[in-house]
Length: 237
Ligand SMILES: [Zn+2]
Image (tube, rainbow, N blue to C red; front, side, top):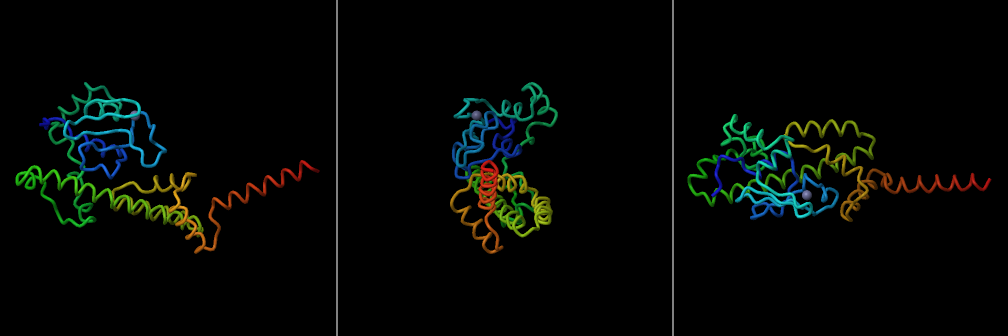
């Protein structure tokens, strides 16, 4: 059994916005993008950092970095482990970090269909069931966040094509505040990335045709070809 004096490692990963592989939530090992080596940063569906909540430890399958929750916090906060321990002592370690599901606010819970969850009562009733429920709620929340992130991206893309980019950015920022999650950064990153899967490209092309515009990728290619043609023409002259 894990001694409760230490923070929950999943809670720490979530607090520092490490991106989780949703398929692994609730499993013995939960996978995340590795904050140490970033070897999986630009690879979709690759998550090298493995976190074992039961043992409160982590390991990266790429850079081999491994350790307990204190090591993870000390890296993420750029402090020595001794400093982390002091900090935990001061803040009474016990409540310092809960499971991510238990840290959801009331309004966040409401967004995924729960009026209120009394985690303590749940735990008292049946510890195993409480653990399953915790993971279930967390998974549901991550699904909701992903849905909102996809939606923010679509909005941003439409905003770009319809000439209302700034308004869209403002709207997304408003949503971010309301939901207390990050949306804009990811959407902008995706918008500026050259990588697209087929479904994403199809979705974008559809929006482009509705807006009566060409997909920006093809527009860029046309511009590039035009520029090259101009260059070769000039060279010939
Ligand atoms: Zn790594």
